[in-house]
Image 1 (cartoon, rainbow, N blue to C red):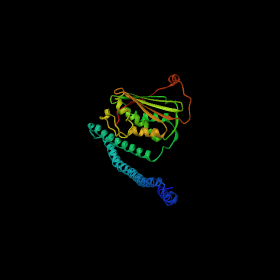
Image 2: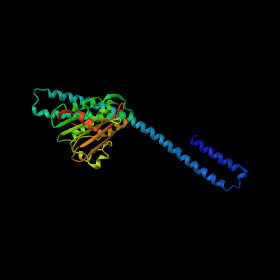
Image 3: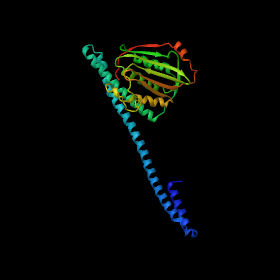
Image 4: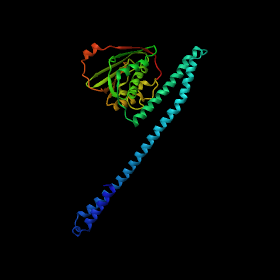
Length: 311
């Protein structure tokens, strides 16, 4: 029954009461009439609110659709000139007559291009999370993490990666591409916020029906006041002013992990590095190993040192 039909039925009921001779001297009849009138006014207000709510929902859907179209258009329009700039930079790097002093500048151009492409990918991922659920398929998390670290540690320099627990397959259900965004972001942040280099340690373990991935660095850390908002969209820590970033990476990481039924947390002290822990459900429950047994059988994987990448 609609609100309008409820109002009509109430009015008819009051009219029948008023027309009944038995109620002619009933002192409650005027009170019923007042209540019915107030109730009718409330129903009218509710109808107005319902109309406004429907209009707002329609406008919100239209705005979201327009935003998605805008993001897709901008990403497409940006990719073409960025690809041209990157191609021209690669040709400059191969130019034998290019002065040696110009090589670092060409490298900065290519790094800037990669930063822009990376930002576009994160914006597109954010849009995808708003319109589509994850596509779960069983894949080997250990192999994916090893590959991500291998890609980052391709060139020599100040950062040293150390992997533990990735020497055996760890199958989990999930969207591999989305989860790659999570862990590549954590690894990139570990490098970016460790400007003085140091060891970046990744630990992979299983137990109690879940898999745990911990990424720890020796960088600038996170202030206690910022840690509660670190995963908010567009939020940047107060001590991150000197580094590039849009405040999207950790927000996307939390959204993706939430979509997979897991959780993400950070433990940090300023100047003493940060440790991010991600927990995800396993493809099938595996018996937990005692900590001593894990320590005894764990084979650390060392990755060559890494140059400080552009973010």
